[in-house]
Amino acid sequence: MVKRGGFLWGLYACLFTIAGILTAFFVHKKHQDTKTTVLSSIWFLWPALDLWLFSLIYFSGSVDWGTWVISKNRKTGRITLRSKIVHFPFLQISYLTWLSKQYLKNEEVYHKVADRIYVGKYPKHYPRDYPHEADIVVDLTVEFSEPREIVSTRAYHCYPCLDFVLTKDVVVLAELANHLAKQRQHSLYIHCANGHGRSATLAGMILILRGECKNMEQAGNQMRRFRKTIKFNDYQVSIAEEALEYIDSEAYSKARLNTALIAEVTFADDI
Image (cartoon, rainbow, N blue to C red; front, top):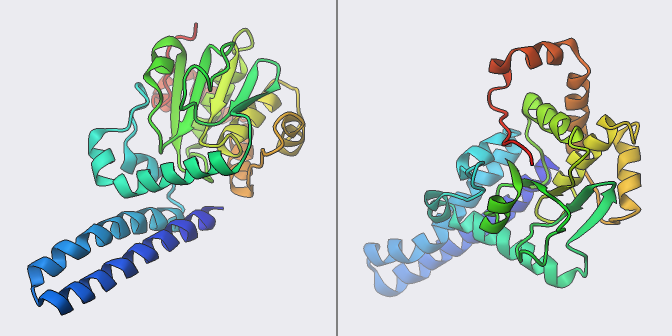
């Protein structure tokens, strides 16, 4: 699935690259002016360069670089203005792709997949697209800014990941899943873009840590009884299983005693 992301953004990048080259060719042929040629082609070559960047990030396997490049604020859930401008092509195509899926697929925004656990899409229209029972929200999108109303009224946790993947930082993922698994008195809304992969993988980890499922396959089957489109991929499962193994290890127990080792993982006080 990492390669799938690379091929997808590589395809978009190729289209913009070809468009940029053709534009430069025809403009130069008509005007014979280098400045005009460059200015006209840059509108295609700039998106091409941005999309090639994300294609290379996927192909390299360094998926956490995508999170760093976008620089989404984990406290506010907002994408910085700099990223919105520089990476406008990637963010806009991500949004348009997501929007088209909403019109083409008649699917509920979210489903309750277990006791006090909801899995779903990016809640663009708040409060309509949000389970009101959920007082903790977990945002796994890197490509969207979270509605301010959610961040200001809920215990908000943001761990941005590119589509098709999860963070490769096993310590962060393990601490996040373990923390959420203990919040039995609260209701969780875990969302990514479409509520199929990233969010479902984390929800599956929580079910295993709570002892409700034995493995990711069983967790997936259980959640699909309520949300049929859930489908985490092999890459996401392998990262999740690695994080679950880490939680059971002696290294994790020692890390819990040394907060410096997990300083990157911080949680607001849950309600």
